[in-house]
Image 1 (tube, rainbow, N blue to C red):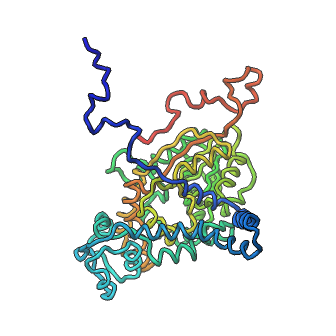
Image 2 (tube, one colour):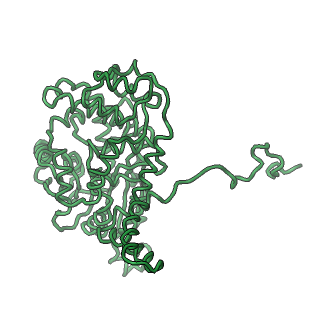
Image 3 (cartoon, rainbow, N blue to C red):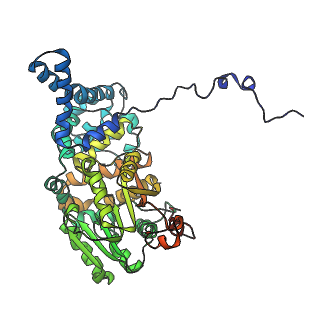
Length: 487
């Protein structure tokens, strides 16, 4: 009998005859890691790079200081400005063409309508016109944006370029205490009613976890809070720190349901007031404390468990390593750190970048540490953490934001009466577009559980030495329900 498991290349169809190593797939360049590395450097390093290159060119060419100065000026132009301008140019080499948007949009500005009639409208032009009340959506914003590939272009405009150089770069290169407070505090001090109109009763400004799309937002958020507490194996009496506690949903839930002594940190007084009232209502005010301050000013102490849910994006690429080292210093040797962070996909598309600039401009200024997973994990391991578990929960975030959008639309009258059309339209665009962005993987949320990467394990040393080793991985991770899951 012939051996059917042995098949020669000649027996494959013609299109499969070539070996799998011969293909047309292309990976991405090292450009993004290089940009992230540059953002992380101190000013003196950035100044030293062109200085060293210019000095080498001057010495090699046997020319004077004029060559040094010219080379020094050319380095950032060729190395930074050139690639950026090429990216802008490339964005205009695709996605153009005719479009009939008349059934979806109604322009109040006839000059603007005439300019784009019959053509795809750049997304930046669209959202700026919508926010400024120069154009109206004839149908629901979220439903209209589902047609965005047929109606709109994802290319960088003059407005994008101006924002990038005037504000975005400044935000990313500084990340000082003063600049971060200026970027962040006013956003969350806008008014608790503003956020309540879309977040709902739970006031949880992070992704929920759904078992069914028909579940309520509150059900999904409670499940997520329980998942976080289970992920860090929270026990009664443990000292728990939540960095970026928002309106206090996690610290209050942890104290009430798991018996922790929880401390939250926020830059916003409005959030702190809500969190303290929440703790009072839940009967755990004696085990919940809220600090209104920059994360860098957290008092030195040791915590059993530390959580950070979608605040680390605001730390910035520049400070990300220092932030993780600070967390490591606050965490007990046998502690667990849970990091939930929004991120972007590594093989980006132009819509991802156009949306990212919109978010930086209007929603989360300075939140440039929303990066691909590789950056976050690499930084965590570099800081001395052992990454135990990572989940990509972008689809859950998409469903969460879709429900936020529905809440926001249902409260249109109240929002407009207090904050005006501009804020209602801006948040309609943010929530409607972001629900789609999350659903297609452009942006996602990573849920990461980690511990200190200690040298030994209680199971890998002698009994007498084990007493001085912080924990056993086997005892911690093997057993029933020791790992939280999203299902």
